[in-house]
Figure 1 (cartoon, helix red, strand yellow):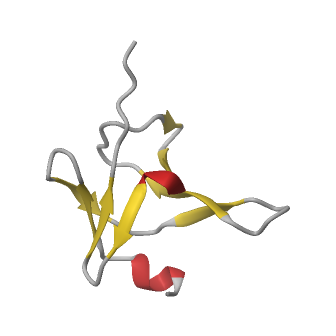
Figure 2 (tube, one colour):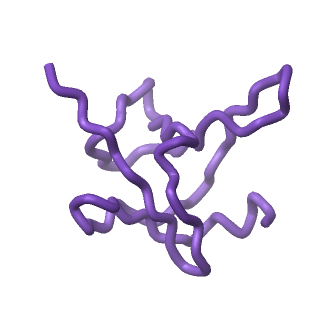
Length: 81
């Protein structure tokens, strides 16, 4: 799959079955030593469940459960404080 193919997919929360938004301009955080994808970096409009870093949201790769033809299923682990 190409990075450009991720654009336009809908993000869906696995546990809540909620639509979180449509992926637009997605960037990747890549581990320089292994070449593995560590996270999606998404310019945020409104996001819940993820830690904001400035104007963007970091979605760790291990939260992504399935990338389908038109959606990406993510499992958000809620932090209990």
